[in-house]
Length: 311
Image (cartoon, rainbow, N blue to C red; front, side):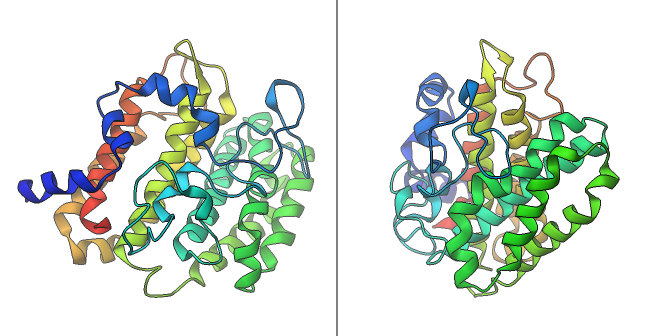
């Protein structure tokens, strides 16, 4: 098994592998806005905030009309069961939520990651922090995933997310938004569950969904830091939501992964456990629990652990 894993290293994107040593973490920081999913507009309020639609800050974006970015590169150019795009940094512009079931599901799971962050914060009494996350699926991601939703007849998602975003500003306690939240969550779950193709349910596609979410989580973590302190709280919280969504998705498909390669599944669970340590709480700690270079390394180790499902 060790020899097999060593061979798999050659199939993983070199930038990811180099990052595993922590040597290029600072370079990732400088390239962050290019690497994150691009948004439909770079214009916005002070401090890079963009309050289009229902509100919420724009910080490099997870989506928008311009299309998918680096976190979805696992699905680019044949990345689902094909030869290209399984871990490289480029080619993400070719990702389509219509053509790629995996990318489409990853986008929906990312929406759920935002909602998970909102729910945790509001229920913990951090209402002001939680409100913007209620808007993010609609403001930051819907423009990117909309073609996939429409092509699959999942039109209920639009109405639910827009209503949630529009009512976010008036939330003072969880009971103010619980009904609308549950309706949006159910609509997203329905959209995810409707993707039942053999390819979408394969261990490879499941792994790529998990990796897209965790890659974006790491980029958010990096963006949240400045001189060793968290200065962009929402980015940290986004990352926590995405990695939590990745955990739920991996756990919900464990039977598929175990059946194909039980050892690889165990390794992936351990790697994800290590990655999640970077987000010990909903509100960021005074000092990072894990240095950013080590967070990149942890995501690279997760990619290595899932490599037997990818190639």
